[in-house]
Each structure stands twice: as structure tokens, then as C-alpha cells.
Figure (cartoon, rainbow, N blue to C red):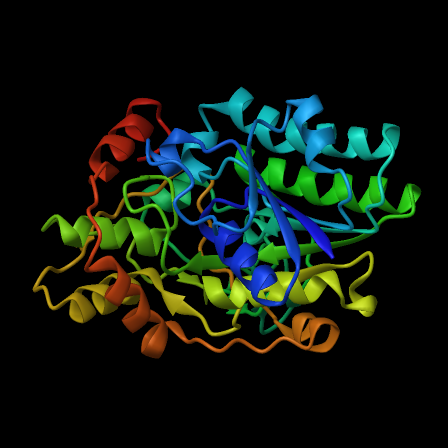
Length: 371
């Protein structure tokens, strides 16, 4: 198979590319090399035997060139950053929604032999995760009010009886309430591919990534994943900044597992037309993530509980991974608390990070997006 991986020089993309090459596929990487993520170093993680095209998704001639002879596409190209997307709105919508629209427009109007697209979506499109009320059953709540957050009343409450809700695993059937420009643009990518692909005889599967972590994540990008941000802080002797009370729960999945699930989706017939959670189903608090990283790095640096919150922040969300297990035959190999954090730290020790989190937090505060 010849497979095009957009965003294939990035954190997740490079691991997907390596796995595809190891399986004997011919791979073409199409990547803009966004400076915020890649710096000035170029495509560090693209294998020598892989064709690399540095271009923007809006470069239609280069995209047509990249698609020559391609059988399948893994579409990962996207700007990533929840907080930043709330003030660089045009950039995120153009890159994510617009870039995906260009790809699909080319497939709709130019000769090709593409039969399958796997598009990267995100858990952020859910907004809050799923919750249970002892009286009113399963709930899909919207965001907490600013009044509630200013009172440091962090947990979700039932709108029917005001009881504190119990978080439960989030299934693909949960209503989508994206709460950031980034999340909306990821939902756009998913829905555009699922709508347009089948109209032209192209099989599509959307993979909804939860909190990916692992080697190659950009430690100097203050809008990347929280495990990388915390690692960068700790490398520089700084306390990780943890919002609210730190007990908000997330689902951390190792990038190697993300790559395995993504590649599995290319050849899983029952995944056709589906959107599938790619997570572990094993929630962990943000505070515990910071503490485990410090312990593994061997530094006596305690996280700083800021008591602050950001516009659009959710409280709890972790995956119900049943569909991935059933449709992709996927079982994760890593758990963050054990081998996951150890492998991440083994890589982090050899890295240099320019800590920009204070700068990013200040920018959000200046704009009234963090309180």
C-alpha cells in the first residue's frame, strides 16, 4: 500500500509513519512543519526511506502531487492548542477546517485511487464527559458557570436535583458540546470526512484521541499536552502549574498505542463510517500526573495548585474504550502510572525545554480567558 500521512512529521504522525514503514508500506509524509511545534530543526523524525513533502494543506498543486498513487490517507495535519485557539481563531479554523476541506475538495475533483481515510479527531469535541446522577441517571452536562467556578465549586451538579454528579466513562454516543475553537475545528474535520468520503466511495473512520503523551512531544510548546508541559517545567526547575484543585480526571494514552490504533483503523472493516474513542479507560488526575513526573525525574518539586480556571475548561472526561476493543481489536500496552511515565521520563531526561508556560498563562489572563 502507498499511504499518505498528513502531519506525518509531528508527534503522533511520526509514530504512525514508523509503524506503517515497519509493516512494509510505502509512505508519503505531507507536513507544513509549524514552527511552534518543530522549531527550526526540520523534519527530525521522518525516516530516510520516506518521501517528505513540506507544504501547507492549502497548497493544492503539492497536495495533488502527494496523492499520486496513494491508496489510503491518515489525516493528522492540524494546529493543536485549546487555549491558543480561543484568540488565534482564524488560524485554527483555516488550518483545521479549511485544510481538511481542501483535501476533500481535491479528492472530489481530481483523479485518484484513495479508498480509505482515517481522520484524527479529539476527545475535546465532547466538552464535558459523561456523568451519572443517583436519581436522574446518565447526564451529558454543559460547562460549569463562571459563578460556580469563582466559588471554587469544582464538581458538576445535576440540573434536576442539584446533587453532585459522579463521572463515568464517556462513550461515542455522548452528545458533542465542543467548548473551544480547537474542539470545534476537530469536530469539523471529523464530520467533513465522514460526510464527504462515502459520497465518493471512500471509506472513512474517525479516531477520537484522548490525552496522548510520550516521546517526541514538543516540550517547548506551551499549548501542547499537559504531560509535556509539566515535563518542560520540571526540567527547568519550575513547579508545574495545576488549575482548579488538580483533581480533574483525564485519560492518558501512550503515543505508541495511539499509533497502533490509528493504523488498525485503516484495515478494520467494521470501523467503516464510525467515530471511535482512542483511550485507555483508566482515569488519572492532573495533580497525580504532575507528582508522578516529578518522582520519576527524581526532583523534589511540588506542583502549584493555582485555584484558577480557563474559559472552556472541563472537569472530567475519560474514554469508554469498548468500541476500539470490538471494532479495531485494540488493547493498549501502556499505563501511565507504570511503564508509561517511566518511558516518557527516559526520553525527557535527554531533552532541552524552553519553558513558556508562564508566558502562555499571562496571555490568557490578559485576554480574560483565565481567571
